[in-house]
Length: 378
Image (cartoon, rainbow, N blue to C red; front, side, top):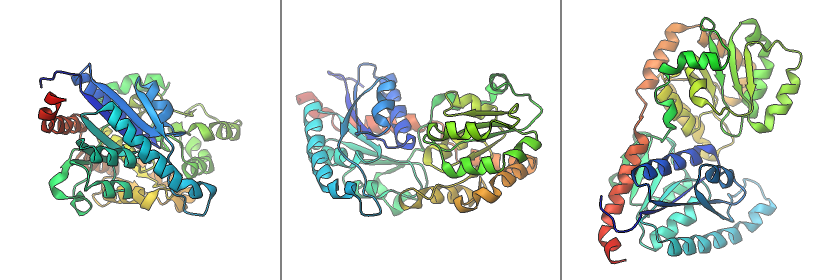
């Protein structure tokens, strides 16, 4: 694709790892194809993207924006002012940076940036990770040129002519984990004869999952199961203090897993929240899973994500309110039921889309191609 100037892309998304990591995966793939491309991120001030994006080597500008709370708060009173401020700043960013395309992966900052792109006739692409479209993305659908989705049937939320089924971007190092099994077991100092359970609560941790594992920790110890437990930084110190007198020879407790590929490679069964990114990784790694959807998310989209897999016998689900009583018991039942594990593995593998990132960047290239004549006279 010939060009006179480096391509310029704005990517907006954040708030949670489920929005940030897909955004970074898209940026990395675009930079792989066009090393001189200029990529600017726009996020929400005070959210985790403001640290994660610079750590990945990209520039980011923050908007003064947040979501509406479900109850009356001081933050809600300032919401109209934040919204106006963010729209004005997003418009200024778009006009100054002059991007060839704008990509939104969800989060508070996406709305103002995508609307600014539309107002300035900049091609825009929305990446919807969930099986249930969020309010922001549904509102942006009429303005966007393309909408990349991870689930079939999303035409009920978006114009069918704009929808492209690509899947969700995932980190490349988890795409071929079977060859890493021996390395992974050595990394965690595990043996190959005992079964291994991986416990994840998302990038920020999950209180319910952590409390449920603490409630059942003696069962896990007695069952001689090997455990990798990512608690999240917020919960780590408290959990460690409660485990001081426990036999943790087979249990690895960490605040954050840097080597997720090895964690998946060492694992036989996963307990996880049902965020879009988590589910996409489980599909790629083909791991039998028990999903515990968070009830604290917009429009209960994690439950909808989980049910999409459960209906195809590709995962099991435990409700958040039931987790404390039954989660560990259900995990132990699954981990020793090899026939059910094999069934879940085969079914979840059918959902995997390992080339999602490449397919999304292909769609961005098409948008830039639409604008090629404009580029020539700019």
